[in-house]
Length: 622
Image 1: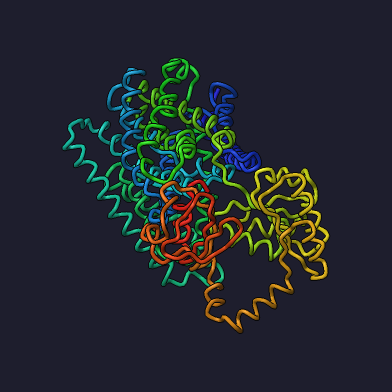
Image 2 (image 1 turned 90 degrees about the vertical axis):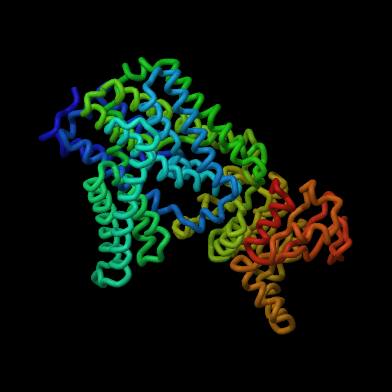
């Protein structure tokens, strides 16, 4: 029997917050979306099992709690929707969030209507909710599966955009259901009204927040804390004010406020972002436990095989269809397209907004529609999150889309500086460090760090040495770097092993093993000499990794083989050129009529982003 509101409310709220924190810890530990653990906890605490939480546990406050939770969740998603990130995303991303979203909406609606014999209005409502993938379930997967930049950018941007647009679309459809509108013209009018009110209120609130954060003294001693609280209060005010003016306009308001704030240079942005993430973690717990409280096993049993078939169609038919159509003509390989097809889990927005709508439908006396909504959304979330999130790495390995790693042994200042430069060029870098204090420093700086002794074969293997293209010994101990070089060469056979030599007298021992060495003493002397003799070049080289870059890659693109430099030049982005070509061990500066052959290695010099684009053109599989 579910505990009723009143005296049991406080322990229930405390338990839910504790469960949310534990779920996040487990998610980080096992590197799967926290939604998996929240769903399991919700079912366990729900009326079908322990009966701790039920529909009446929060009294009449459940709708308000879930509504405010949705506001915070949507606000955080919108806050991370950066315009510059949209510009940097692959061209296929725009198709994913437009044409792809339309395919998902129509396909899901049709499947629900015919397979589950649902009314068209409820079918469209479910279809609109299941468009959203969401960064909160996609990002943990990408942390486990280090894909190429173009894949990660497409999936993350799709998740952020669809989170916001799907929520607004679903709200409009739900409002139309409540009012009884089914004609296209009134529906468009309703959409425009709700969106207009939301944009207006969200814009006003965002403007006030920006002004307050920039120009109002928020107390010098507690300014970061006050800024965090001000933004949280602003999000809730935007939701409440817009919803009061026009029912269900609150989601559009918080989405607008979040987008405007996220794309404006405001003080304490990092603190605000971290704080919102923590608050979202708490409200997510409420949402998923509430969803479980509304879910009964007999609802799932009633959906039966037809419900599972809907989930399969969403995950294995519609998703691949929309991905392959959207990615046509882009640089994605077939394996990458299949990975994007098989990793599109639904999560936060469908669950939270579905819970809010289910409460409204129950209050309106449409219990059967509420049950169908909750059951279908839960099934799709469960199937996609558990199977796609749980097996994402195996899927990526089977499709062979994980880029080769660069292992850097030594997480000190040299190792971290090298990792930062490599990651800025899209390399998949893993640091190995034995010192726990340095491990924490590197992780706090955002690096992927494996804690352990880099001279231990098992540690190297667990860090991904078998899939490493380059191994770098970057510690301050030459004995450690030499042993790392020996183990890597004999056990894992990477393309290159590079070692830092701290004592110039030890360089010969490394070179006898065929290890490329960088002597700190020699490198410093050469750099000083270059600054004396070639100052312009050295000033430009100082910008490598920031505004300028130099990269080398093997030519694999069929469209370039057999072409002359003169023919290839116009295909390269502006502000970059092919400076060197290596063939049969000989490096030369190519003339205009020089013809590219398969296996040539080209060195491209120019602007940072332009060089990255050129490298992808030269070697699409890199």
